[in-house]
Image (cartoon, rainbow over all chains, first blue to last red; front, side, top):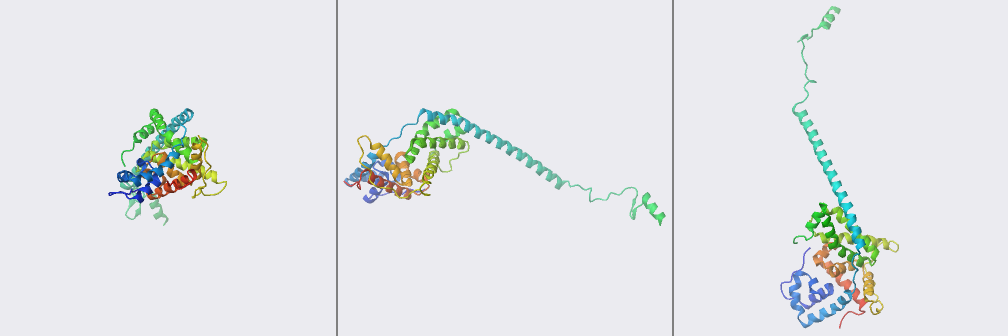
Length: 149
Length: 180
């Protein structure tokens, strides 16, 4: 959000526009334009513009707001204890869930790594036993088959 | 933007420091209450808004990060949103939208000692966005940049709202264009 900057002297139109918006107290005016405004305020025209804006300011200053009651102050402080405690507890639980999640993810990743690096070789392997030959199984069942023929 | 004067206090509240809670209430409650009182024109509703604003402060303190906005500006934005919720609820009986144009009919002359009430009435009769701009800059002493940020408008738009609001107040309270 940019603020206008005034390097040179301020003209009456800009001074009046700022007084229309911010009133007669220069401390409320845009910081970047205050130095130029202070210089223009010393002119007769500047005095007149500020005097006009000051009439409304004098009325606005009469509108005061009562200070907060001790009851309101106490109620707000009392509520803080509950709210802050709940938020901290919730954050603690989320931290716990987060850590558990990281642990679980680690376990899954570890299992996947073991599966890739050291796969189960039994299913694809044919293990030859003592009864097997290059022509087939030469075990007792094989003999029986030959007799049947 | 310089260092945020509230940042350390907010961090301590997030850490559960009861002294920081009290310091924050002492620092912000008068400002929040005044803002809501002038926006709503109703003391009881203003107290409700102040309480709700602080509930949000307590809930967000532990995770609050500056991100280019001062904490005080954020608090003003929260309180203003709560005020607008209430203003909209009031208007639901009449119209869906908040008026953009102020009712600038001059108010009757005040009896001696009655000026304060008259100014309060005039503030309630100008358009809410104009009132918001005047309350932030004139009464809450926010800089133009902070006020524009709280209102989520440009500085030029803020100045336009301020000027139109002040002109409307001038017409109601002074009854002329303010010329000598």
